[in-house]
Image 1 (cartoon, rainbow, N blue to C red):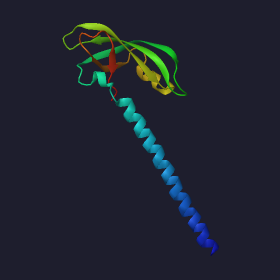
Image 2 (image 1 turned 90 degrees about the vertical axis):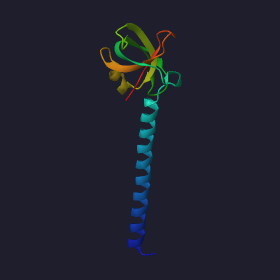
Image 3 (image 1 turned 180 degrees about the vertical axis):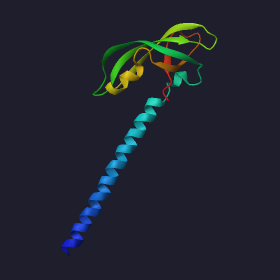
Image 4 (image 1 turned 120 degrees about the horizontal axis):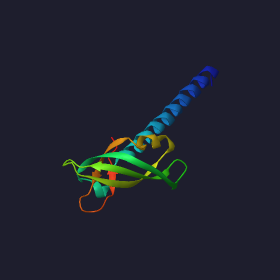
Length: 122
């Protein structure tokens, strides 16, 4: 086999391999983002209110990048009533600032079932 042809073949196959790896990395990021945005099925169709984070408490490590936090919100309902809501959230280190005290999020809440809420991540 001609050495130039062999080198060209190696370059083409290597390029295809790198393109496949990059494509899989992009697919992994897209799937992770989709999972983060998915709302807990128990809260699908629930009314939405305005929540302001008042407290974020570390509760423990789940895996290499996921940490369990208790997030407490001041929730303001559309009719003006307020209550304290909470949720347990698994956050990577880089996500913690998104739920720092003072940040605001739309939250789904279930009337008459207590004070548990879910942030709607967009």
